Each structure stands twice: as structure tokens, then as C-alpha cells.
Length: 374
Ligand SMILES: Cc1cc2nc3c(=O)[nH]c(=O)nc-3n(C[C@H](O)[C@H](O)[C@H](O)COP(=O)(O)OP(=O)(O)OC[C@H]3O[C@@H](n4cnc5c(N)ncnc54)[C@H](O)[C@@H]3O)c2cc1C
Image (spheres, rainbow, N blue to C red):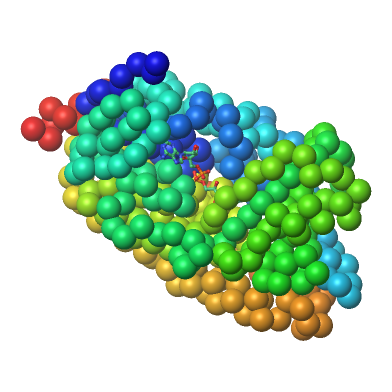
């Protein structure tokens, strides 16, 4: 039988993946009593193909987890294969190693971790399968289900969600490849990301009602590989409210995954860092909780126009994928000038320099909030 877990803490971080760990990293050494919970051990269940702009790993000091690095994208349509030169590189990384490194960066304070499944929330009480946890500062980094929200539930296929599934067969490759091909998926794309001794091969669909298992198996088969080691999930593709009822939502729970590309790791880290910095300001007495909620909500909202723009392109691609028009677009990106311009703007939505800022580790003796909040 599992032991009971009933506790008061200053900050309760629910979810120990990219978003939750980024929040915790910003609280290192703050002196606050921080409790992080997840239904699995840290790093136990990979939640993505783990491809990210390398500069993010560099600025976060996480390059030890890198498996392979790519300076171009190979994009296949039914009519042509294009090679897009990138102004910066993408890397694949090992999920378990990256999570362990982020945990280590966060762990020099009074951070604790427990495995528990979150079931609901009443005000400042989070209910889990092991008991109730209380904190004045609560973070939902639980992914697309947004478990700590008490608003109407968001459920597929009606919700604004994409879906992705991948397999991880043993094998090796040199190219980071994408497929824009309606033979695999009508609105979406396929991918193969080499990562050392395995390939991460998958299909993402922009339409929640379109199934991804059969095309994933087909793509792996076309590459001569078995569909080993399934991993998949829903992916929100529209910004949601980043604060609700005094709870901070970050990463997929706040719809922070970028539409069109479904790139959600660096944004989960980016918004997680932003959230952690606001929480730290509360711990250090520089902001009230309400001010922090308001500032963090405004920070997230300020990205609305860029997310809306990417969503508009995603929808347009849903219309043109099967045609030669898609091939013309992919061909245009063979131009270094066009590709560099587009990818530099794309990176700027959540730039790696953001990881270098923030008031981290400035105060190792922050006050305990429960006392401070009275
Ligand atoms: C197949 C696939 C491939 C992808 N590939 C990439 C990629 O290569 N690059 C990229 O940038 N993005 C990729 N994405 C998107 C990316 O995975 C997400 O945007 C990202 O993981 C969001 O991070 P997060 O921390 O918000 O949530 P998650 O990584 O989903 O983490 C949520 C955490 O909460 C825990 N949790 C959930 N519910 C509960 C509960 N009730 N109680 C306790 N714990 C709970 C989970 O165990 C997990 O640890 C991919 C998505 C899919 C589906």
C-alpha cells in the first residue's frame, strides 16, 4: 500500500517534466519549501521525440544529454525532397538524462519530490491518490489535461488539440527528416529524428479526429524499421489561460506548445522559467501572489499574436498539403535567405537568451510563504 502524503508547503509544482522542472530550477536556493509531484519518477516516461534548438540546451547548461545535432532539415513531399539550411542547429537529447540534469540544477534548495497522481483541486488544496497537499503557490505543469483547472473540461476530439504518436526502433540515421505527405497524414506531418542508437519516427495530426497509429506504423515500415516502443499524446495547439483561480499553468497545460510545428519543449521550459521567476519574486517579498499571477498571465498573453499566426499557417497547411503548392513552399525554403529569415523569427518566439536572465540563486534564505501569507 502507498504511504499517505499530506503536507503543507510554500510552492507545489504538479508535473515533473519540462515545464515543472524549469519552474523548480528558478527556485533553487530560494529557501522556500518546494514540493514537486508526478505520477511517475522523474524522467521515467518520455513525453516527446526530444528535438530542440541546441542553443536552448547550451544556455540551460544541458548539453550533456545531447544525442545528435543537425544543421539542416530534410523535407519530403510526394513530389520532391528539399534540404532546408538552418541558421542554428537542432539536437535530439535523452529524456531521462535531461530531466535528471534539470532536477540537479533545481535540487540545491529545499526541493522535495514525491510520486503521486493528481486527481482534483479545491482552492489551495490539491487532491492526490496519496492524500491532500496545500500551498499558497500552485503550479500546473501536468500537460494537456490541465488537471488543476476547475473550468469545463477540455476533451478531444472537440478541443483544440493536435495528436502525435511515435515509435523508437533501434537504428541509426544522419538526417533530421520531415514528411509533408497526405499518403501518411492529410493535415500534419511525419518525422524521423535520429538519436544515437535509435530513431524516433512518428506522425502528428492537426486534426484530433484523424488517427495516427496506422500511418506511424506505415512510415516506420517504409523506412524498413519495426514499430517498437510507442509513445504518444494529445498536444494543445492554442494558448489557454495561464492563470486561473490563483493557479499558475505552464507548458502544455497552458497551450504553450507552438502550433504548426508542435514544438513544445523549449516553450514549456521558457514559460516555466518565466513562471518560476515570478514565484521567486513572491518568495523574496518583491511581489504579492496576485501581482505575480497578473504579471505571468500578461507575459503569456503577450505571445498571443505569434501563436495565432502559427495557428493560421497550420490551418492553411491543412488545406494545401496534398497539392503541389506545398511542394512549392518547401522548395522556397531551400533558399538560405528565406530559410534563415523564417527560422530566426521562429526561434525569437522563445529565444534561448531568456534562459540566461532571471534572479536565480540571489537569495538562499527566502521566507516561508505559509507564514508570510498569514
Ligand atoms: C509524439 C510526440 C512527439 C513530440 N516531439 C517533440 C519534439 O521533438 N520537440 C518538441 O519541442 N516538442 C515535441 N512534442 C511536444 C512536447 O512533448 C510537449 O509540448 C511537451 O512535452 C510539454 O511539456 P510539459 O512539461 O508541459 O508537459 P509533459 O511533458 O506532457 O509533462 C507532463 C507531466 O505531468 C505528469 N502528469 C500528467 N498527469 C498527471 C497527474 N494526473 N498526476 C501526476 N502527474 C501527472 C506526467 O507524468 C508528465 O511528467 C511532441 C509531442 C508528442 C505527442
